Every structure is written in structure tokens, then in C-alpha cells.
Length: 348
Image (cartoon, rainbow, N blue to C red; front, side, top):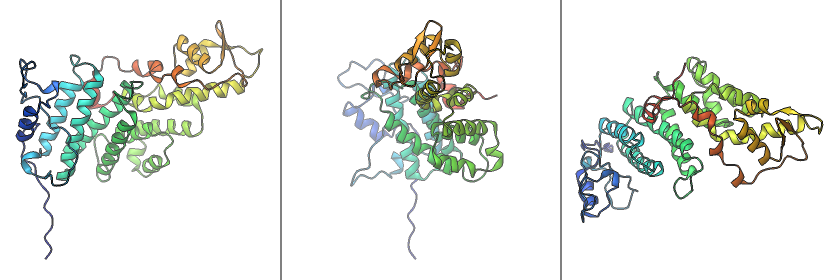
């Protein structure tokens, strides 16, 4: 009979295998978040055993990545993720957040690598993936507009999509506590995707008819119908994390609204109230004025003059998404980064 390949099972009970810890300490490859306090200026800084986390390592020929002593079992992986969230990502003392993101991103990637090697499934796997998705969605919003050398949105998107896909596979059978939240997040992040929409429409009725998913479906429909007014109105009902997911579509949505009104209210004698337009755009008046002028829409005192001839596409450096985050920022309220990543946005 043909012998079946055995699945390796991790035996490492710390966040970083002892051999890697020793190697990185000897090679001076410890991240500053992992250095033992008081040894930072030493010729060879020492590792803090309670803060050092296994880093991601690319598979290499001849390298054995299945040694049990180098693999962390599911419970340790979940504990590692909770540490990365509570003590690193949510820590106000660690700055800049681009460095925090880079560290957490790498260590979460290592966690997923350990899960793949061990073919981890079940509640611990879901808990890790759910927190990973929330972190990446939050990062896509918080780091929007950062220089490419500090944050690459395409790389973040690739890992977010992979984690979402893996999580959706976990949800394929049975009931899951947070399934509605993540089905909605997936649709909001991927507005207009026929693949994601088809997946949602094939969900069980109890999931598809939940409040979160229904709202996400309505926003997706407004997106497909090129109805920016309805989309922005519905988007104001989203919680903070959902708003983070949809925020990358808002620049194009507001552009479409101004273009639509430039054609529908095309008249030199027509004056459209600035306050009403700002409300439709879900922006403060000063930002609405800035957005109008970037698109060649004339603003005269408290009125807007639309012209289909005057509408222009702004240069990228004149229209930074991060300048228009007010609608999302307002929803964070008193919720901490840690609570958002652990438990998602509040939903009423």
C-alpha cells in the first residue's frame, strides 16, 4: 500500500522557535520591537523572549520547514496574533504606524505560513484569519496615501484577498459566528466584482438576508447602477470597519456624482446650494469646495455652478483620498484599534 504523507504538527510553545531566536540574535536581525529593554545599545542586543515573534521566511530548496520544533500549534498561533494586535498594532507608544504595520504584516504572514504547513482548520484558523482580514482592511484605510516605499496597497490587497478567500472556504459548511460580518466586508471591499457577488447570492438565506449583508448588497447595486447619490447615502449607515473596506471606492464615487450633476444641472443660470452638495458628497463644505475646484466645477460663494464642458479630471497629486476620510474617521468614535481588529465594528 502507498504510504500517505503525514501532516506535521508543531511543538513550539513560544511565539518564536528557539533556534530562530538564537540565529537572529547572533546575526543582529532582531526588530527593535523585539529587543530586550536595556540592551538596545549593546554590541549584540538580546532578544526579549516575550516579544520576539517568528518572522516570515520564503521557502527555499533544501530547507526543512516542517520540523515540529519550528512550527507553532494552532493555540500558540492564535496567541501570537492576539499579541501582535494588543501589544503592537494597538499600542499608542509604538510609532510610526507604517513601521508597526510592516512588522505585524510580516509576522501575520508567518502565522499563515505555519497554518498552511500544518493544514490548520477549525475555530482557531477562523479566529486567526478574521483578525488578519480586519487588520489588513484597517491598514488599507489608515495608510492610504502613504509613500509607496512605506506602504504598498497592491501587496496589502493581494494578502487581503488571499485571506478572505481562505476564510470563505472555512465558512463553506456549518454555522459561523462572524460569517455575516465578513461576507459583507468582502462585498464592500470588492464592489462591482461579479465573482464576489455570485458567491454572496449562493449563500444560505439566513446569511444573505442578515442586516449587514443586505446593506452591502444594496451598496453594491448602487455601485453597479452608477448611482453615487444612493451609494454615499447608504455608506453613511456602515460601521467603522465596513467604511474602511468601502473607502477606496469613494473617490471614484464622488467624481461620478460631480460628473452626473455637471450634465444634469448644466446651465450658467443654475445655482446649486453648496451645503446640499456637501451633504450629498458626505463632506464638510470646505472639502466639497476643494473637490469641486479639482474637477473644474465653479463655486461662487454658497452656490455651485455646474457645466459639462467645464468638468475636468484632476491630476493625481491634486486629489488625495486621505484628504476626504472624514466620513470614516467620524465612525471610529471611542473604539480602539484593538477592539476593532478583535471584534469588528459595532453593529446595531
